[in-house]
Amino acid sequence: MSVTAAAASGPISAEDRKVIFASSLGTVFEWYDFYLYGSLAAIISKQFFSAVNPTTGFIFALLAFAAGFAVRPFGALLFGRLGDMVGRKYTFLITILIMGGSTFTVGVLPSYASIGIAAPIILITLRLLQGLALGGEYGGAATYVAEHAPHGKRGLFTSWIQTTATLGLFLSLLVILGCRVATGTDFDEWGWRIPFLVSVILLGVSVWIRLSLAESPAFQKMKAEGKQSKAPLTESFARWGNLKIVILALLGLTAGQAVVWYAGQFYALFFLTQTLKVDAQTANLMIAASLIIGTPFFIVFGSLSDRIGRKPIIMAGCLLAMLTYFPIFKALTQYANPALATAIAKAPVIVVADPNECHFQFNPTGTAKFTSSCDVAKAALVARSVTYDNEAAPAGTIAKVKFGDQVVEGYAGTDPEAKAKGAEFIKQVSAQLTAAGYPAKADNSQINYPVVIVLLVILVIYVTMVYGPIAAMLVEMFPTKIRYTSMSLPYHIGNGWFGGFLPTTAFAIVAYTGDIYNGLWYPIIIAGMTFVIGTLFIKETKDVDIYARD
Image (cartoon, rainbow, N blue to C red; front, side, top):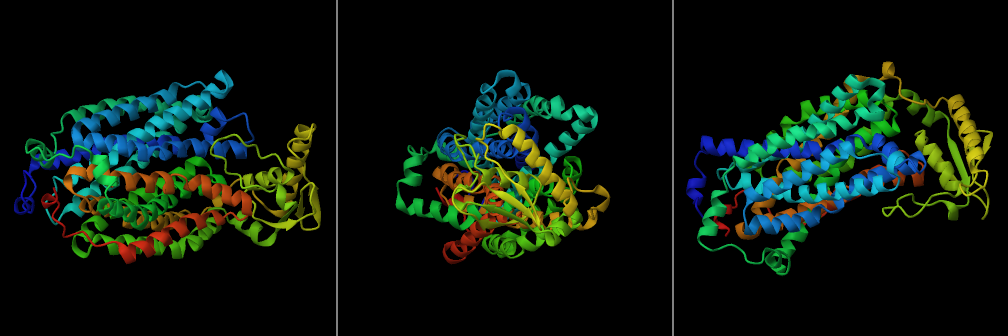
């Protein structure tokens, strides 16, 4: 290696600090591009999935968002191999160009109303390209920064990379808010495109920054000595000694980290806007406030992990999430939409239906349509954030909804008169819900802003606990010549699959069970798995000398 363990322990140079800053800033811009879609999922549902009912359309929009996460492991393999064989710097340039170009194209893509089925197909293709690019981004950035950091400060230095995802989300929220204010009522029609188009400016800045980077000195030395891996994929995943560590890193670290991350930031936003019916601008402002307050804790926990270890902090974050998610999200309902909380407690609703007609409304391929009377009734109630009980009815019975002693008869989506019956069904359900006190949307004057923001900050702090130290830990688990490839795959399977599918899975669980909180079981179970496996089988890494691992 070009840097000995002793030298690595010394102070980092001003030039190295500049390199680390440039790497982190470029990653902020890349995450900004990626998160625009997630923040605008409701609008994108209307623009590109307007051929289906709103509930199914929103699920499809979330699935299109998740499609980018689904391919991230493949991006990790593709760009991880490239980064281990060719270098970190060139990989950075490729990933940012793909990411920025795909995002800009979303801003000019015609809607479903203009070009029909081609619109969602092109949209999903662009999401896949974004996911591939991001799959190659994180491992390179984390490896690059860690290989410049002094020994004993890798947690601190790599924690700056960890802030980039949150800062990118924060930047996207600010741009969206600015565009909402500037375009007013036109935002849902065309103003939403502006944040995507603005990304071309960020792309130019990011490319300029990436061009100024020097290659990792550790990689340069390894290349000069001819110690590069000729088959990083084989060495990473076809040899049990390393594959075992990859599996443990996935199940005992990144899976739990991912669900805590997405529950604390993205699902919290979806819960506020889709379930609690807080208007998007207000919800985004509260999320932004929580991010401003909580983001410095990435650095706090990254630095703390240099002293007490990475593992105890990550495991503590998973445990706290498991124990407190239900009370925190119930408190969000109480303080963000108290009228809804009161209605749920005092006005129970019952769906009476043939259980065989009630389906789990999760359809990644988009080929199934949920048209049974049970599915239609449940979708209508979920759209109004109604918690309901299920009561079995005889086979073949058309579903109905009970509001106390009042009953609203349902209908099947395949009925020849479905359109007329659907309008009457929605009218009757809305009337009963209004009479029972269910609000159509949250009353901003009734929101307890300080308490809601405190609750959101707690969720963000859990995120910083599991995410702040994890880059350093993953880097320390693998040798230099296959580090980029080996750490990228478990990270992106964890975050791309376990985390990326969280909003979609949770939303479908709620629609199926009728309890607006039951979607939380998904992150709680995954975080619990990580806590057990990580506690029992993951070894502490903070004292590992990565420069001795070639």
